[in-house]
Image (cartoon, rainbow, N blue to C red; front, side):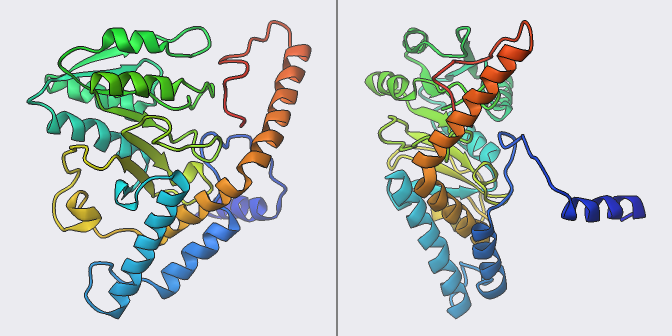
Length: 308
């Protein structure tokens, strides 16, 4: 590390900070860091090992899985740990494409998805899959009727984000999911931006799969979750060992899984009050900018948007 960078880091440690980009990432909460460090220091065994240290790690991993499942109101065996939201999105789209190729090769998504979905869809197009990219209205909302019109006999997946990561618009996910269920088409939603900001319960939202990421939730970078409804066919993401019930090989990051569970627990505990507080601050900021800066326009829906 050069001297200039070292000085800047020391100054940052002791200088007041005003951070305005929590939509991009969040600093881990102290309670989350404490939970992670306890795991790294004291429960560092391999969960696949058949002795005491491995058993302790396995217990903590499954405890984290159960807590997350309870907070999302799903089954614990429907929760799969990944390295990030991007991996979860990739697994959902590519896994469904591989598992359902004999049925069809048509996928529906929107033009405003995160690149984790858009670029995955583009990669699948190069492999012979056909993708329909739906338009949105001036508020960034997808019309559920457009989803239904786009569904074909060979449609194998619909993937629409829960809330947009750029403008915060919240999509009519439950309605879209109900349409997909009526037509027997699996429905995936990228919930990375929404988790911790609004109530998220995949079953109530009629989602068969949902992607989540820890670093948008005041947990460390490097951990994500894929919710997959039990019974839904999905190809394995990585092959090797029997981790994640044989679906995603590789030694699990137990410490970060515990951190994710702690972060989600704290987010759910404070969700209602924080949403109200952030909404007041958000609207105050928007109104102030519009009043003071000529020709300012608000991107996104004026009310159907994330509080943060």
